[in-house]
Amino acid sequence: MKQKLRELFLITVGSFLYAVGINYFFVANKLAEGGVTGISLIIYYLTGISVSLSYLVINIPLVILGWKLLGKKFVYKTIYGIGAVTLALKLTSGLQGPMEDLIVVSIFGGITIGTGLGIIFYAGGSTGGIDILARILKTYKGLAVGKAMFIMDFLVLCMVAILFGKVIFMYTLIATFICTKVIDFIQDGITKAKGVMIITEKSDEIKEFIMVEMGRGITIFEGKGGFTSNKKEIVYCVVSKLEIFRLKQTIKKIDPKAFVTITDVSETLGEGFGNLGEE
Image 1 (cartoon, rainbow, N blue to C red):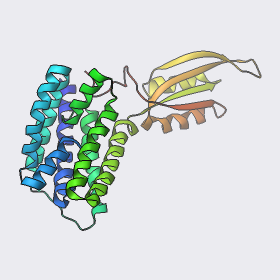
Image 2 (cartoon, rainbow, N blue to C red; image 1 turned 180 degrees about the horizontal axis):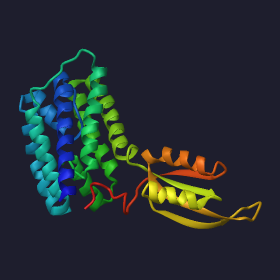
Image 3 (cartoon, rainbow, N blue to C red; image 1 turned 90 degrees about the vertical axis):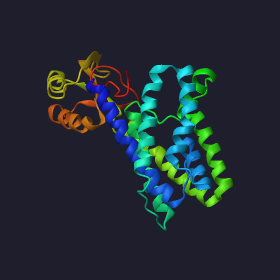
Image 4 (tube, helix red, strand yellow; image 1 turned 180 degrees about the vertical axis):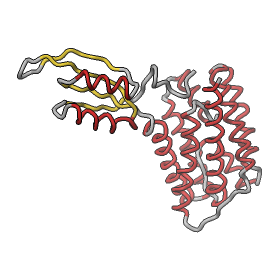
């Protein structure tokens, strides 16, 4: 229950950051977006219908479709995410910051929106929209989610170029690129794990530090030196990106002659590395 509440809290925080980015930067300066939010912005600019209302109405049939084709498990958090974003868009609609420099708007709008979406995705949530369509296309057509989302975002941005001109289109592309990079950083940059392989003659001390001081598990391999034929233990462990500096410094103190290789680990499952958004 505590884990679920934490996920819902993060989705809520992410939704409000996302809404602030949309209203304060994009709506106030007439920039656009991809996906359902982009369509909602286009409708707002052309008709004056609120972004929150359009966003909710467009998502309703998509959620029903997702419920039928993807199952209840996926849709529950999606419904909460859509509800949180809709409410946040409504509550922050008066929070707008018109600016003369659209480059600044694109940069900081992309950072704010990307941070919000990154937190939502990190918590296993979804803002609905093209995310639902992309997952349906992956499930039934085998099209990669990223590719499907890019195609649909691109179609919306083409509408923006036709309706509002190439300048708005280009500034929107800048914001979208920054947003994507921020999402990747939040999902991978902070939480990405590191695989560490240590060849040392002082494995007992290093093992104790990793297991007792860092609270991480290890695996031991038996090795033999290629030149000396001396037997050595090879210690392998996986630590978070934030822990790697401490581990490197300690290894250097214990055994300055230790040979260490460090590699990126794209995904980890198991005790101490469970993904927040997983069931």
